Image (tube, rainbow, N blue to C red; front, side, top):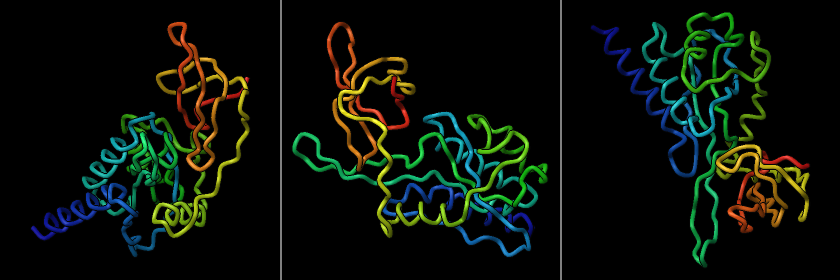
Length: 216
């Protein structure tokens, strides 16, 4: 009975941690369990738009394991950005790294069969960063910097801009994938560019993130 209660409490704690990146203004992470197991951060590739679903499924599955603490944390980095639209200021939320979910796992997760299969069998997950058989961990300092940016404790570094106004580009991701156009505007702070593409014989401005285009 005690084991069942403890399992339920752990599952509830995991659920709260799971939703932590939905809390405006920050990320609330669980303390790493003091069980003698070294844990590292890893990045999972996820289908675009399914990051939140992948996160939910991973934590729900982890809560059912014999050791539900084996996955310490799972979160999708999300930041709040203040934008001005139609003369009004609005706060919108953007994924810090679209297509990725960060997970804190035992070092060398490929050696932990239950964790390895749990992740590999989760719909929407396409793999780890690194080779297919040996995931490459992220540097703790790198993840800590991301968390500090999300919490507003550090300014986000401006991304390198490889485009210039007037450049010909191809949209590679999203509903307008494979459209060709010209860069009309670059927003370094938001990491977005506006591309003028021809739709139904009319030029239309499409806003995409830097990673969604390539220069041609």
